[in-house]
Image (cartoon, rainbow, N blue to C red):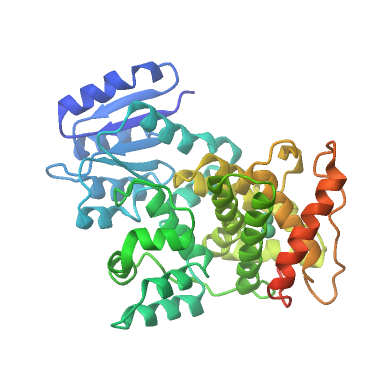
Length: 411
Ligand SMILES: [Fe+2]
Ligand SMILES: [Fe+2]
């Protein structure tokens, strides 16, 4: 069945031009066009759609109100705003509701690419319940101690952008939320952020203040932590993997852009665990328990008990939020060695290797033997030489950082 896309605008000539612009996609998508929010909701009631792309400023029901209704009634539907305006007030009303914010005029290739990107990973999450759960997520939660630190900094009259960025970059949830806003066109920023500090700088202290204090974009985990699962240790693992990934990319003389993608993908590679902890705490508690009692890989038990791994769920969310394909792939497949190719040094390969080395080089827990990265993910010419060079890079980085970290039972 063809995916169904609904375009909503109050101006008939804009709908006509969208129809014309996207006519080559008629064989791929079923496209429908609604003249305003009320007409859109009536259409959705008869025929739910996979993606809704709505204008923001419309008389009666505006884009934010429409997306709020869509989120409540059809949580699985991907929600996008395509707007000619980027005033702070209207953007702020959609930062949590819209998966992506595109600005008019939007070239047909860009619009097509964003819709395709949002649909690309739907098939890997078989369960409609899980897909619904992910599409409903408005923002990722933070560690309470980092959240409190940020609140204290923001309430300080002399809050510094550098200190705000330092705090945000300590937390995977906050980092992901901020990168989503900068990488999509929410604030009309024309470039992709290279890292969290860059993203915070692009947004500025005032916008961050409004996002945190008025929009409540950041929150703490609603149910607290699970026994036997330390988020702090997971964060430490993610920040080491991002650092290892960037340095491995640098060692391989990858471009600056590729190094930045490796860094971001390393930071976000286990974002699916955060998603599961915050959205399915009871079910995830059982998964973590079983993995620990049976001494099995977490990803394996996740698949068995939930039907998808943290890697796939995290990858799906990140793709809905419009991150680059190479970052989405790295997150989605970091537990699938068959997808890795040493001949192609993509963020996926680099992050998979960095994750494996972090588990090899950092003592995970006192009663758990360390593993050693020896088996090639995929046998490839020159693998052994390469893996030794990479081990030295990772040893150097790890010996410069903290040694007393535990990342739980993964791998
Ligand atoms: Fe993982
Ligand atoms: Fe990991």
